[in-house]
Image (tube, rainbow, N blue to C red):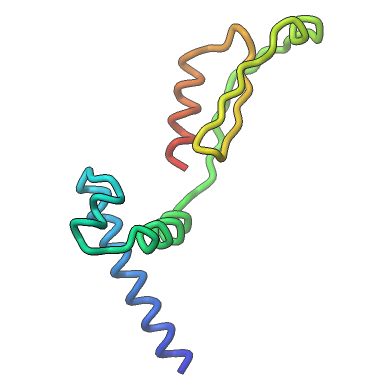
Length: 110
């Protein structure tokens, strides 16, 4: 009985991996892709989370930092950036825009 469940699950994984690959290549939103293919959006979201998370590899990105004196940090509040509801980045005055752009790009791929 366990073996049958494992085979069924493996087949579902394979099928949803194909669907996710097709969705990514389509350029459509998740909702539109599901509508055109008669799929439930919740199913796509579930398998996207399960399958894409398995392939994630943690990566560290060196971000240059600058030591700011306490008095300088009290004078101006840092900018707080919330990315995708998962990452919070506090940005001090005088930040390097190119570094911030690279950081956002890395976080956006997660």
